[in-house]
Amino acid sequence: MEFRVWLEQYKYLGQCDRVRCQSGQNEMHWQQMMSQKVPVSSNEFMSSVDLSPLLDDGESPEEYMQSHASDPSLGFYKSMWGETPCYFFQSHGFEFIFTQ
View (spheres, helix red, strand yellow):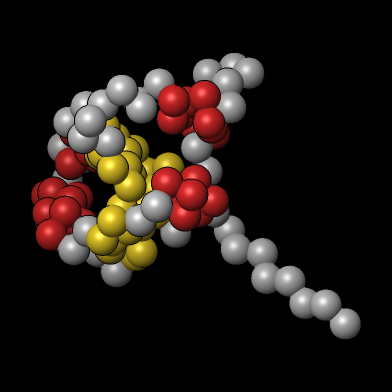
């Protein structure tokens, strides 16, 4: 008998500048996320998050990420958003946050 575990992908919370200004608590969560960030591979990131809210019609997740590939600061991370695990990527001075 084969057992499979299907993990739900992390959902898009928002772009850092928009999320941070929504409340003081979000600013604290962002500070925590940044201080506790751990680098992850692009493969781990891509398999863990749902990028669909960021995609244009007909655009694949790979095509979307390719549009950020020219940024030398592009990075993929996991961390905590308050009590909630999160993933995010940094590109062009912004963090794009995904929570469980």
